[in-house]
Image (cartoon, rainbow, N blue to C red; front, side, top):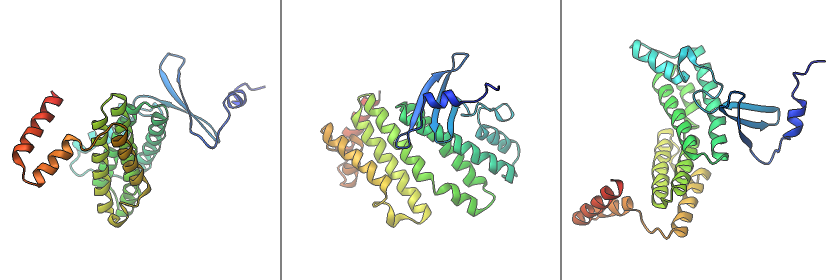
Length: 242
């Protein structure tokens, strides 16, 4: 009788439809691995490089390989096989990004979101057609939401609540820019993801007694032409960053 089945493993870790089931384990060689329990079984992801552990033509990710191809070929264009592989990489990094968020490894979630956004930028620049571009660009705000959420929570972990507020401000600006590019600007303020980020920002302001961050004060000073105040605020920001 074959012993290759997963019956015992699946019974030991039952699927829970109302929660994201994720765990961080060690592989047989001691490396970290992520496992996600889904309805049809278990996904296992590598923590570095491509989540499936594959190295396209010896590169850490498909994006790295495509960027090398682009640098060597001024007439580079994405063909259908490349588009299929790009979508595979998008899906893999999505699974790992949400896993990092669930595991509260926020720096890793930011890193994987940045990879996805860079891959989106590459697709937009070299897309074979407008429809394929839109298929990906419609998800940019969602990736930016995850990145913003992770960056803010990382700042809170580092006891820098003002930096968390600034991360949310920056994320909202990028999401709004995406909405404008997509022609959705009238839906920006009522978007569920935007509302959740705004609620998190206000919660931080209340919990940590933050009226306005230095960047927000600087923007107000410049807008009202209070240039001496703006200079003092820039000095404070420089000292804090040193």
